[in-house]
Length: 399
Ligand SMILES: NC(=O)c1ccc[n+]([C@@H]2O[C@H](COP(=O)([O-])OP(=O)(O)OC[C@H]3O[C@@H](n4cnc5c(N)ncnc54)[C@H](O)[C@@H]3O)[C@@H](O)[C@H]2O)c1
Image (cartoon, rainbow, N blue to C red):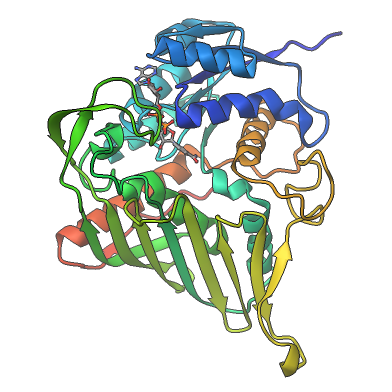
């Protein structure tokens, strides 16, 4: 008997919404069989032209201008929420109440209160929920996690994580939703949340933060004259508005294991288009990663011969998590990047829904997303109290 298709929709057709649409289109091409036919049902965006463009490019049946239409459509089983953060909660609550599975973009919500309400909604319902921490799907980062978990780096001594971008360097860049929402919702929530999640993915839960400093370098920005996608340099007028959140954030952190860490995050780091990078050091080794070279990482360990000591470059290939079965060309050194990670994330989400045994670990949960937001909030509190140490509520244990 033919299987009933699994119908998916994407809400938001901006920078990241297109990545979800492209991801669902390709879920059948990775990691073998196991999914029922996937029906690409709808793309929704308040800007109907964007919705139409994404639906056409990625083969979705229809484009609509209201997210409510998607939520009310009983034929749709699962949705991605890929709009500005303050809209995540109302859409997620409505979708969960309508019995739909939800993959929500990071950070989980526009406020801690919203994030808590979303976790409560998930706990009341029998649906799969997930958060879009895409970097967990990088073959190189997953391989480094294996080094850490196998204790090949020995006892960990330092994690240093950075996410340096330059999308806000231009003072004529338009005042979009990214610049609104108060301290913590700027660079820290937008990109810092990713590197915090990577740190926890590798090293376990963060339990406290201290020494935080938040800085806004460009206090006012021009209002856009029309729609803006992502970080695009869209036309702006003369009218200016206040930037409500931070351009840079630095802080220290301690993990549950006792490991100490430093984090720095900036959207005004010139010359860094998308610079997520980290070093993790132990008593017996270190590993280093820089997203500008996404298909490789450096690892160093106690090689027996002192004369051969030093970091070596590892190029990802079929021996790595995600690579086997995830790339059309099963050969080392063929590259890979951001787009593939969205495919793997969508695939893991749909596998979770249908219960397919999976080579991929499940996505971050809403509870994981709430914990990351609690860390972001603690960083804000630390900054507001002159750098005080702030404890984080315990993470709800997940996979
Ligand atoms: N995981 C990642 O790597 C990643 C990367 C970028 C963005 N994001 C996240 O994705 C989300 C969206 O970010 P973006 O950069 O794509 O933003 P964006 O501004 O490019 O796109 C947002 C879209 O939402 C639409 N929209 C606004 N109000 C709407 C409504 N009421 N109903 C339907 N559509 C509406 C806008 O028209 C716009 O097209 C954010 O939560 C962001 O943090 C994640």
